[in-house]
Length: 159
Image 1 (cartoon, rainbow, N blue to C red):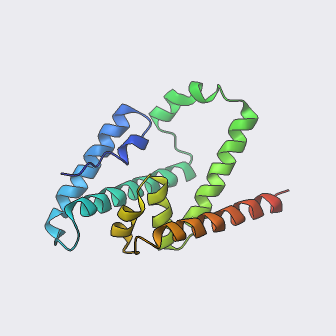
Image 2 (cartoon, helix red, strand yellow):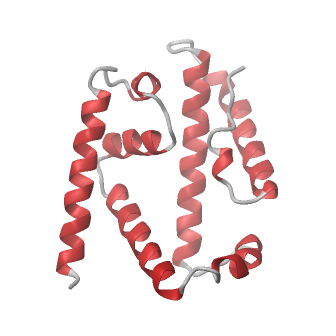
Image 3 (cartoon, helix red, strand yellow):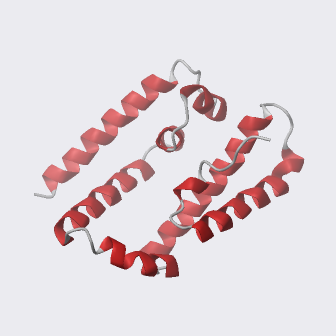
């Protein structure tokens, strides 16, 4: 069975990693009846795990918009206080702006970029998205250029 721990490693605490791993296993269990063999089992597992991760991220974004804070985030607040207020604010604004720019991409471009940021290789991105493996690196390069232009255009407009 392929590993499903790649999205789990991004969770900040062991408890959240365990919960998230259970969510992925539950999603795999629920969707196994729909596995039709059109792709490899490994690719199918990655698709299900990626979709579970994407759903989890969207849920977290909705919580943050409502200004909800988890207990784990409260526990980590003293660790975050070590950064200077200015650098933390600037870093947070930049990450938030980049996240918004990624969310505004077309669905296929967004999926390619998220998989790339998760450390997936071009051949695996190709299997998951259906894009030819030769075109994946060029697509990533173009998306990065678009994001870079939009990121710096937004920074210049804000001044």
